Length: 268
Image (tube, rainbow, N blue to C red; front, side, top):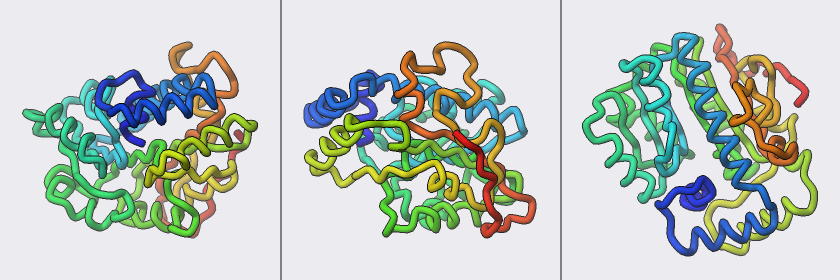
């Protein structure tokens, strides 16, 4: 699905089968490219928000194929000393990221599955670039809906969060069916028919909020992606449906680091 997402963003690093799946999904949900663009715009706002609060190191889990306004580009525009580690399991995404990052001593990519945080956090790239005793900006954008309930998404996020210092930030975007109709069902059916190993698990506002356990969700709370502190028209879709297809939120790790603490619930 990383290559299908690249297609949705207008990228060129995808295969015919990826474009066929993307076209099927978009036929079921016209305007889906807008939702992909809005999610990408949130990435930039999230990185700038964290950088403006002193974060100088970032871990982007499920970074996908490089496109415009990548995390290291946004962060290093704020401060050239910012350090970024990307993670993806797709070999195409990893290969293109390695090419893009050649010569950048402050950024690297790990070829790994997000479901193996210990391998990621112990990787030479993370150990060489990130200091886990200092706050980190962790990004998990359009990733956790690929983790089914039986695989324990809450526990997975907890394993990452436990390794982060107090004051770290967590950004999540997650597909929801709360504001959608039958079109979304048709779109998810198209993904199922593609036989991709990545299958969507839709979650409610309450369920996505729970993923922030141990983090206090900052204002404006967990909201539609286009509604999270938009800086201008480019950050918002022209249709409310596409603004609300994906929830977006950022949380700050509680000073106690207590994973059992209840994440503040905000109405989206």
